[in-house]
Structures are given as structure tokens and as C-alpha cells.
Length: 322
Image (cartoon, rainbow, N blue to C red; front, side):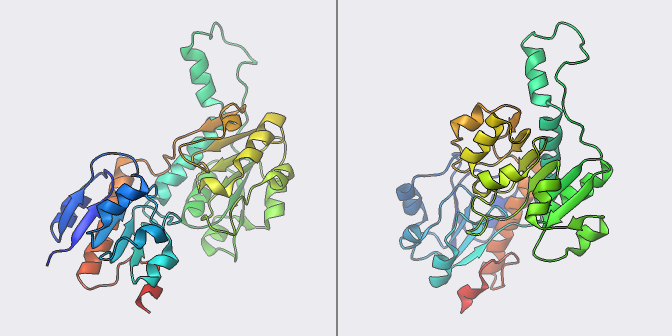
């Protein structure tokens, strides 16, 4: 019998066609996450689901999906899924790591350049008709080249950011649980978080979200940064205490911030929206056609491998087999 597969939201590329080769696919073509009750109803007959990071797959929902065998998350992170509850129900969980590293690193540098050189602010100034003449003091920003970049979390994305930093002649320091060979080969120096915050002109966050990293950057740690420093976050919103960041920006404790992820997306702290020298983006770190198509294909391939009787390549909970 062909498995019943649900794709919860629109995705690019050929992933849905791939899934239709091996199963009966219900493809929801309306953007946006469903309310819990509607998502539960959609998944009740499903053997597999390809979901997005905005789909909350928690213990309550899993209790209503007796046939579900695999949850394929189209994201590198999977904090939207109760992995322990899935494992207890013998449900495989997969993600899509690696494939989005380069595009997210590109976006990280776009945020660095954008906020430090006041790109968005400058374009708005021009488009509003305020530009009347060239001025030696107009919209002065901060130089990026030859500065110290602090990378918090030297995984795939952090390493990709460090590679880009070499082209800007930047000194790179990083935090990690152990010395990272690839980072060291790029000339990056491993330091503790306190040292990184104190020395960096730019602090870029690339850690996964979990209990240990919740509000990793809080009021105390923002105060450790230099007043001329910038915070960049393309990791997960809850790694930063958004209210504390807003206050730090309004009070001039740090110079600015480039943020792509938020604590309660799509809601953003109102004081952050009004904070000076910020560049705020709607979670587009991996938003290129090529990367999102590759992510969708990877998620689909995990499902295909599972129903072929193989271990999914990006399995995050091998304990589900116990």
C-alpha cells in the first residue's frame, strides 16, 4: 500500500513530484501554518509529513496521528518538533542541515554590511526625496573591513561566515565547545564568550536553539559588548532576549543590530521596531530559490529513503528505533 504523505505548506522545486512517485500526496498550497486543530485533522490519516519550521509538531498533536511514521522538517533546526515525544511513539524525525549554510552566510554578511553602512536607511532617505546635495557628513556608517568579527557557534554556517570574513581582512574569534579545525585553518581564534563579547566589533550568532541557548544574549551580555559594536542574528530568535536588545539599542549600549529571526515570529517587540540603527528582515536567511528547492528535495528524500526501508540520511533521533 502506498503511504499517505502530507506536505503542510507550499514548497519550491520538484520535491512534491518526487513524493508522488512513492506515495499518495496531500499538498496544501496555502501559505502559513494551520491552527493546531486543523493541522491535527490534516495529519490524522498521514503516514508521513513534510513540514516547515512554522508547523508545531508537539506531543498533543502526535497523540492524534496514530499512523504517522516520519516527520521530515524542511529546516536545519527542529525545535518546532517534540523529538522526545516522536521517539516515544517510534516516529522518525529528520531535518535539512548543510544545504542552507552558504545562503545563510551570504545573508549574514548582507546584514553586517547593511546595518553598518546604513544601506536601508540611505535608500529610504533617497526615495523619500530628502537627498538634496552631497555632504561629507551624510549618513556616516561604520567600516566593515579589518574589524573583529565574533562568531558565536562555529558550525557549518559559522564556518561559512568566517570564510567570507577573510575577504574583508577581518580578525575572527569564535566560541565552540572544542577547537574547530576548519576555523583554525581560516585563522580564527577560539575564545570564551566573555572575551568574544568584549573584543568584537561585530557579534554574529550561529548556535542552535535549545534550553542552554535560550536568551544566551541578554541584558548582561549586551552590556559586555562595546558601545560601537553590532549584533547580528541569523540563528533563532529566542537566542536573544528581544526586550533587552531593544533597550540596549535605545540606550546606546550597542551601536546597532541586524536581525533575521525573532522570538515570536511574525510578532516583533514594538520597541525593537522603533529602535535606531537596526536592519530587520522577515526570516529570509535561506531564501534563495536554489537553496529552498534543495531543502525541500532533501526533506522529500528523507521520506523516500524511509519508505524504501533505509535509514533516512538526515535522521535526528536514531533512538526512535530503540
